[in-house]
Structures are given as structure tokens and as C-alpha cells.
Length: 306
Image 1 (cartoon, helix red, strand yellow):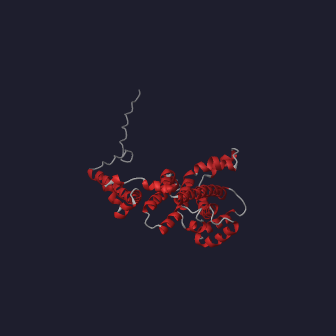
Image 2 (cartoon, rainbow, N blue to C red; image 1 turned 90 degrees about the vertical axis):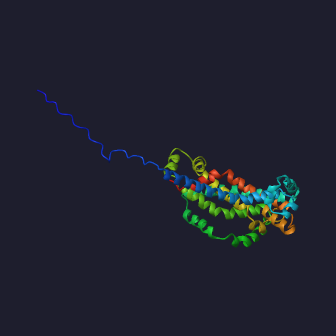
Image 3 (cartoon, rainbow, N blue to C red; image 1 turned 90 degrees about the horizontal axis):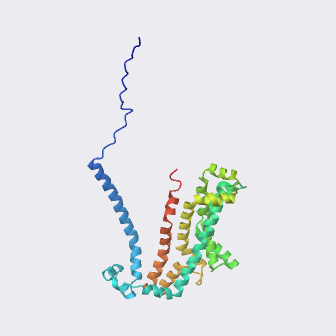
């Protein structure tokens, strides 16, 4: 005779096993979240307006005649936009000093940026992943050069360039900028490359990859944000430089910053030439920054999130 065991009751869900209920958002929490987002957006808008106002004022001044600029501030042109024209930019293109200085600035800034980025990337990879005698001591020397002010080397390097025939030439200005831009660039890229996973590089070596192939096909694509950030910084520093150009460039090789300064000294009232020249000097770095801002943000955030 079989005995049927009574059915065991199913255990009740305990508070520990039961899924917690999602907290219900009240009207007060939704209002506080909306106010917080609105406050942040409002602050960002105000900061953006404050930053862009001088740029807009300079652009409007460059579109006004010398008489209108002397009669009132740039904001008065908003009441009569029909008086704005591009005649000042036509006169700017006819100014041989400004146009020559602009192309001198391009010929100084672009090669300097390319040389600094290429040399620093190669040196940064070598200091991070290659073993050679005196590697750590050489890197410490590079780091020590970061604390050397640029003013200390102006006169000795000027004397050296005079003996080598580089003083007053564009290659001399480029060489000086490259020499003083490399310590920071090598330090930045070396620290970025050193954070790469060792296993990834060892796997590439086991697959038969040479150091050059690993550097060009693996390290450079991964380090593109840091390299782009360095390129932006270096380009802005060289483009806006005036101290080095005042000493190492002559009248035929001086960049736009020095030419604008000489125009102010010689013709203090020619705002119709200075305003478009200053706007041209300003808008190029701004355009470069916004063109590479995605890479710049990635480079700034690199290493902050693992």
C-alpha cells in the first residue's frame, strides 16, 4: 500500500530574493533634475557667448570702414548692417606685407608641427617599449629640459644660428621651435604609449611583426587621440608665437604676429587693415581646433577611464 506524501508548500519569496521595486520619481525630483540641467546649460551658454563675443566684435570691425570704426563701437553696426562690406579684405590682399607674413606663418607652423609630432612619436615609443643603454637617464634628461625657460636659450642660440647662417630665416625659426617643443611632446607621448597593454605588443611580436610595423600599424592608430592633441597644442603655440619670431626672423621671414605689431607701430590708425589681419590670424587656429576637437577631447580624456 503506497502512501502519498503531502505536497510541500512552495517557499514564499523573502525580501532578500524579491526584486526591489523601482523608486517612483516624484514631481519634486523631476523638477530638481530639470532645473539642474537647465542651470548647467544656461551656464554653458553664457560662457560660450562670453568667449565668442570678442571674435564677433573683431569680425564686425573688419567689415566696417575706418570712418565707421572711429565713429563708434562695433556693436553700432548691428543697427545698420547694410554698411558692412568685404572691402577691407580686398585691401588686405593688396597689402604685400600682411600676405607675405601670413604665408610665412604657415611655412613656420606646419613644418614645426609635423616635425615635432613625428619625432616625438618615434622617441616616445622608443622610451616606452625599447630597451637600449641609458634609456632611463636620457629620458630623465628630456624631462629636465621641461623646466628650462625659453628665454635662457634665446641669445646663445641666436649666436649659434648667426654662425651657421640660419639667423633671420624661416628654417632657423622652425628649428628653434622644434628644439623647444620636443621635450614636452616626448614626455606626453611616452607616458601615453607606456600605458598600452604589454600583452598586445608581445602578441604582435610573436606574430612576426617588426618594431616599425608595430609602431605604424598598431601604436599610432591607438595613440591617435594623444597625437592629435599634441598637434593642436603645438600648432597653436607656434602660430601665436611672437617672442621667438621677433628675435630670429627678419623682415622677409617674419610671421603674421610680428607684421601686425609693426603695422600698429607704423600706422596706428589703419584699423581697416589691422582688423581683418587680426581676424585672419585668429580664425585659422579656431578653425583647426574645431576641425580636430573630437580627437582633442579623446586625447584629454585618455587614461582617465580604464
